[in-house]
Length: 131
Image 1 (cartoon, rainbow, N blue to C red):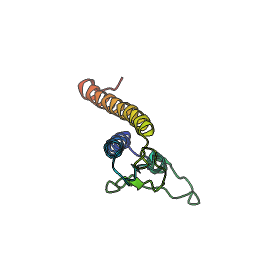
Image 2: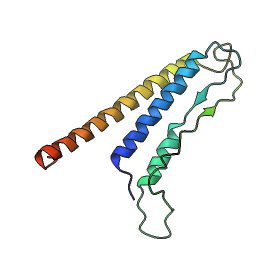
Image 3: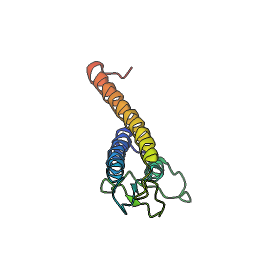
Image 4: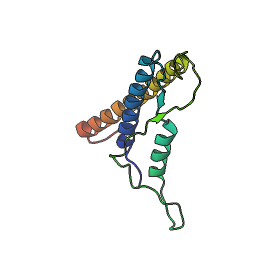
């Protein structure tokens, strides 16, 4: 069964919000001795969503999830590397800022698509057609 678009967009917005919190925490602790940076892998979120939209037509196909588990929170990973990018810990400010910019673009994309989705719903309600 395919994942409804709005649920995928909500999941994407949740991911971006959580990622922003993780990046902010990393930047805030750049001067904290022995702090280990944290991360959420987008590829894990993407693979979860991709597997939910596959349609099987044969029992020999790989099993797919029937939608996403709303209780499945994003997994935060701790970077255990010992490099001292900031001189105090493994937080590299350039990497964190680049990831924050990328995350902002993902959030803007998902929120724009969510707004477009609701405008379409509003048009259908007003006119009885989405076109």
